[in-house]
Length: 289
Length: 341
Ligand SMILES: NC(=O)c1ccc[n+]([C@@H]2O[C@H](COP(=O)([O-])OP(=O)(O)OC[C@H]3O[C@@H](n4cnc5c(N)ncnc54)[C@H](OP(=O)(O)O)[C@@H]3O)[C@@H](O)[C@H]2O)c1
Image (tube, rainbow over all chains, first blue to last red; front, side, top):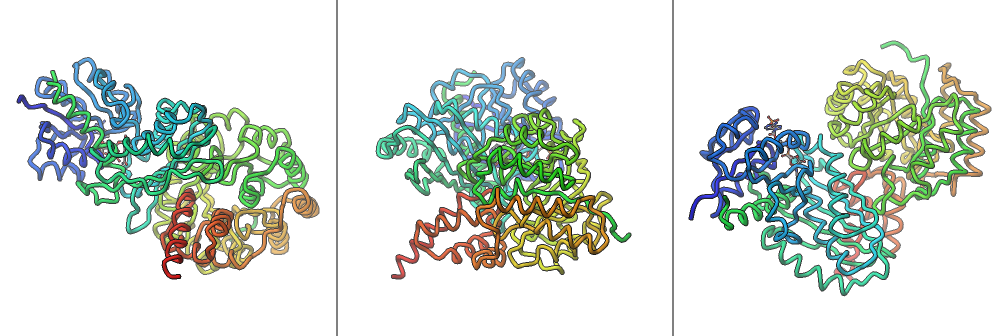
C-alpha cells in the first residue's frame, strides 16, 4: 500500500498530541511537524521522536507540496482563515482542528460518510465533538427541540494560548454545530477552564428542552452512537443520564484521554484528535490522491 | 503610598443581586432602582444576569429579563450615573454581547475571569479599548491563588488595556490580613487603579472593603442592603456612611443612598441577605457564593446535608461556572450515604 503522508501545522497541545496519534496509526506517515519557532515543548518532543520539523509555518507547505497528501491545521482560528486558501490552491486535503469553520463540520460518529467529499473538514471543537452526537440523538428522537445547551469544563493546563484566544470562536462554532446536527431552535455553549490541581478530567453536560421528552427512545438511539464513538475515542463515557431533571433532559459525558502527550485528564485533546485521525485514515484507505 | 481621599463606588445590586433572586429581576424593578441610584448620585450602576452578559442559561439559571431589555431599561433611567456591565469570556462573546452592549450605550465594561485565567480576557478588553468604552479587568475567586500570582495575572490585564483591576472575594473567604496582602501586591505591581468586591460570608465585607481602601484601593463595590449572592456583598449604604465618616469623598448623597436601600428592600429583595449557617460553611470552604441556591435545591432533592456538599465542592476546587458539577457531587454524596446505611 502506498504511504499516506500527513503534515501537522501548529506545534502546541493539539498538534503534539495529534503527532503521537498519527505515529501510532498504521495508515498514516507524518512527514512534517511545523510551527513558527523551535523552542516549544511540542517541537522538542517531535524532534526527539525523529520527525522532520520546521519553523517556517505555512511557507513550508508550498515548498514541499508534492511530499504531503493531507494537512492538519492545529494553529488558531485566525491563522487557519489565512492558511485555508493557500492549502486549497495547492489541492491539499485539509483537516481543520481550529474553530475557524471554513469547511463543513464533521463529527465522525454522525456524518463520517457524507464528510468524505470535502477538501476542508472542520472538526468543530472539543466540546462539540463530545456533545454533538448526543444532540443529534436528541434531535432524531424529538421533532421539536426548543433549546440545547452544552457546558464543557477542561483543565486549564490543556488549553494552550491559541485555545484561549479562540474562546469566542469556540462558542460560536459549537453553537452552530449543535444547531446544525440537532435542529434545535436555539443553542448555547459555555466553556470553563478550571485550574484545579490535580487537573480535572474533561467533562461536558448537555441540557435540552424538548416537547414531549422520551428518555427511552433517546437511549435506544444514543447507545449505538456512543458505541461508535468508543471505537475511535476509547475514553468516552456517559457519566449521568439521559435523565429528566424537571422538564429538561440532562446528559453528562466524561472523556479520558490516552495520555499520549498530556496526561489522561486531557480528554479534550483526544475527543477532537481521535476524530481527526479517524477521518484521515478514511482518506488514506480511500487511496488518497 | 498616598493616602486615599476619594473612592469610586460601583454598585452591582442589579447584577450580583440577581443571584439572590435566581436571576428573576424584572424590567420594572431595574427601572425603579436605577432611578433611585441616579438620585443618590451613585457613580456606576451595574446591571445584568448574575454571571453577566450572555450568561442566562440552564447551567446558571435563566434570567427573567433578557440582556437587551435590562440594558435598555437601565440606559433609559440613568443620566449621570454610569451604566456598567459584567462579562465573563466563556459565557459572553464580543459579537453576540459586547457589540450590542456598545450599541446600547454601556459606559463601563468589567471583563472578568477566574483569578488564574486572565489571558481569556485579552480580546474582550482590547475590543472595549478600541471602541472607546471604559474597561476594568476583574479577577474572580481571588482567594484561590497567592498574592504574587494574583499580581502577575493583574499585570496581564493592565497590559491588555484595562483601566483598573478589581479583586473579587467571590466566596467571602478573606480576612482583613488577606486583603492587605493581596491588594498590597497589586498596588506594588500596577500603575492603574485597584478595586475590591467583597462578600459577607464571614461577616467581614465592610471591614475588608475599608482595609482594601487603606491599602490603596480606590474602587469599591457594594450593594444596597448587601443584595448579592450567598451572604450578600458589602452593604452599600453602610459602606458609604463609613467612608464618609472617615472623610473619604464618594460623591454619593447619603440620604439618597439610604432611600435607595430602603426602596431595594421593599421592591427588589425576596429576603434580606444574612449570614445563614450555610453561608458560613460556604465561606469557610471557599466556594463561589453564587452556588448557594443550587446547593440548597439539590441537597433537598437528594436528601443530604448541604454542608457536606459545600465542603466537598471546596475540596474539589470547583469554580464559578461549574454549576453542573454540583449535581455530580450531590449524587455521589447521596450514593455513599446509601452505602453506609
Ligand atoms: N486544547 C484544546 O482542548 C483544544 C481542543 C479542540 C480544539 N482546539 C483548537 O486547536 C487549536 C490549537 O490549540 P492548542 O490548545 O493546541 O493551542 P497552542 O498550544 O497554543 O497551540 C497552537 C500552536 O500553533 C502554533 N502556531 C500559531 N500560529 C501559527 C502559525 N501561523 N504557523 C505555525 N504555527 C502556528 C503555536 O506556535 P508557538 O508555540 O510558537 O506559539 C502553537 O504551538 C486552537 O485553534 C484550538 O481552538 C483546542
